[in-house]
Length: 111
Image (cartoon, rainbow, N blue to C red; front, side, top):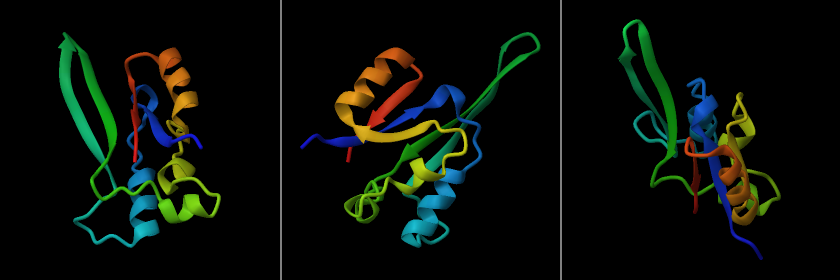
């Protein structure tokens, strides 16, 4: 049986926070607790008149990769509800191939 994980492609994340809200609803977390947390990086000036502003969703230590949903054949709530489809769930071997194609702006997280 292959191990599954999350692939998050930071290049196209819009910062909509759907992953945070879906996780909070799935686990009934209180306001100060997140299974996945959106980190805002920026804005900062790259050059005259050009700003860089990124949003980076990170699974926290409370993330259990929605083990109950996955045990029932589903996928983690953050991946299901990601509006930009930047969070993918699947076998690590497949995600590794996708990571090679995407380059440095994507990360794989394991349970």
